[in-house]
Image (tube, each protein chain N blue to C red):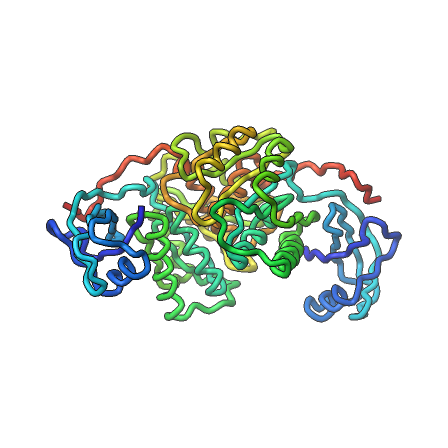
Length: 254
Length: 254
């Protein structure tokens, strides 16, 4: 299946019309013709099944065949908080985390952050998230937020059912020992290159986060982030063949 | 700890001498001085603990304080066989798989491969593996082999205790349902962009491989490969704080 982006998907009637940019993509790049079946999402959980009616590269029109709410979305809302790393590597994490099912990615300014995240790079990361949503056939695009300070991160800990921090200095439990498979929301915290200062980990623990080890081999931040997101999804049974139940979303789709 | 590369580590006496390239790296880039403690590995399992004796940027000399065999190496020998994808993305997989503990990476030429892997890019991937070994403080550098044909891949299935193939068309088990935590060698097979043809999966199954699903969200090859390697390592208890037992290696280190 091919997934296209349509901001107005949730509010449409029996027919939809794509804006010029996505129309060109549908007709020129993907070579779709009248009669083709395709899918569109608003990135907020609404999926439309469509039959292409008019392959106009300026304004594709399509007939609505069906609507679904949050298909293929994981049950868990996973927020990845990652210390700011070089923009190219951070973009790679956004791409992978989106495909793996994350709900939100928060760049965090910790003590050892040296990389800068300029507004135009943040915008680029948001476009990467939309493309990764489409390629992975997801129906929700993760938020990629503006960089958060450490105090903001501490505040986020209490707003998730579970908060986990990957810490190189942890000699005890691995992720499998502490993930609660039934949690509805999980915050996964990974440090920048150079890791966390011990005092930062102490403050995260005091706020309610649990630290875990990723083993004796030192991982670069972006590898740790991707492995941690994949690990939570696996431990929550989100990476297997049985489809997760579709879940109603707050914003009505039909 | 900082890890440097020294091909002759296993055969040394009480003192070692680094070649010019690594000497420059130790003295110029890492700014080490006489008296500093550092570590070196031959990438074949031998680790030396060293005290820097002469910080000559042409030929660093160091005194051997201790020797260890395969510290921080996983017990499982994991081979990642990945359909050939674009070189930059393949290099990213080599980097991540090395950090996560893979023993070997095999580029495979499957039916849907469109990318090319030129010899100079393969050489570059091997250098990436050495750098990733050092940064992750591993003591074994994974083999990055020349591209293998599909028949070679079929032959590899029987030479591993377990062979697993990630297949988008699999509606049943996930990795957690089929990994045998005690296996000494595991072959993880991931297709190129576009995935496997059904006939290829059938041939892999007939050779003894088991297919698994990575969930309903479509993953790009490189994300699937990294998530699969991390998943096997997690399921084999290789991503947690307890250090894995050091294992004797065939080539003697002392």
